[in-house]
Length: 384
Image 1 (tube, rainbow, N blue to C red):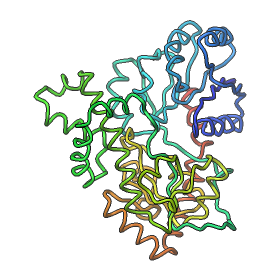
Image 2: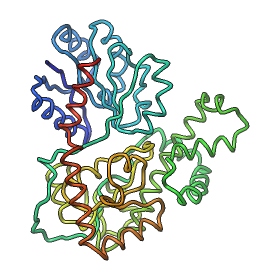
Image 3: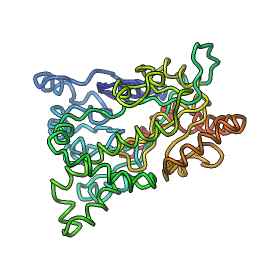
Image 4: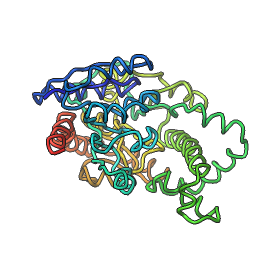
């Protein structure tokens, strides 16, 4: 079997892509690994090479290139080419499923809640979306003894927010949104277990005198939810980090952290891969906070840090109970107060925390590697 793998751009996505390519090859699949075409004129010449050469094309987030997306359906039909698409972000942001032909699309999504949310839409489209959570590569992420000039109690690795220029422009031109976000935060911070997007749609339904179907069809309502989700997710990340981490801890990510964190907490950006593994192995625990677009999906941090045998403190999600033995393997919180309490619990009994970390590490290696994800994709492809 031959696959064509289209390498995306980004900070972490290229690494996930390469992990999957390696896994496909280890499963005996021949893979032609190539960068995603970048320009319109490259798209057409690239597409001419597709006919009959590959069993399927593998891509993460449809390559994440908006110009590229508009050609996919046309290519699928013209070349009768199956596309394997693994979404590790909200599929709606990539015009899915409209951008694809159901007869030639094998779709996967990292978020179980999003899969359920899109079930009706995919059924109307004529296709299906499989649930496929994120994973790790145990050849990159594993326990090691690090001799380092720093040793953090807890660490958080991640940006304050992935910049969205449109949303930032809307926020800047509507000063009243800041007050609205603050008011919504006072309600939302009581229980993070409700997905942020779900919380906002419910608030909007209470606020607007429209039938639910009419509201869901209103593009201004969708824009409001997206913009407020963007702002509330930033606020949640800042508030949780400020509540849980202090001078004994470390934060790694973009420089926006310096707008509200003290200098001694922020330690700059860190590349994904071996250096990140070293940071995790220097920590007593790793703090995890889900992104705003997530419904129930788990982050990369959970799988990578757990593979290193480091205790993880994360937001509760029903997916945790689906994938792990919750009380035996991981620490969770549903609000700011619980986050601080669980941090204290970890620090007070590091022997118990390491015991949990070792249990989840064994499960990660047995069930949640990219090898297992690639094998599942190939099994689905054989049945497609």
